[in-house]
Amino acid sequence: MAIKPQWRMLLSMTFLSLAVMGNVARAEGIPIVTGEQWIASSDAEKKAYLVGIANLLDVERAYAGTTAGSEDIAQRFGKGMQGQTLDSVRQGLDSYYAANPTMVRHPVIETLWFQMVVPGLKKNP
Image (cartoon, rainbow, N blue to C red):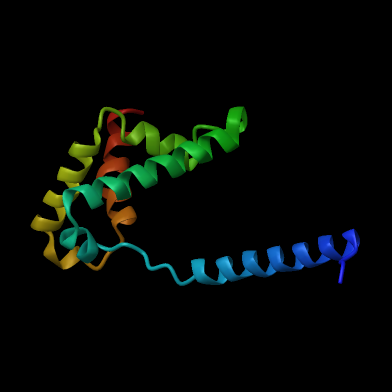
């Protein structure tokens, strides 16, 4: 039985829509990485997490383009992390969690923001 082109397109779009909705539903269940997972991770895993954050910020900057202002989160993140390397950020987070074991349940991205970006913004206004 041959499927007419219109029906083939309709079926394709239906399956694509279902696949997208399924991915969205799964994305909502993705856990936030906390200090507990950070401490248990290898240096390579930690770097991969940080590279993921950096890539996300690069995508955000590219998406915002020239309309991004100084209050844009990606711009502030970049300015606050000026002069940092993957290793210095990894070591900074390692040191923070070692010195503050009661904070390991906090998300790594929150710790990164308040312990490194915000102080960096004060140094690089």
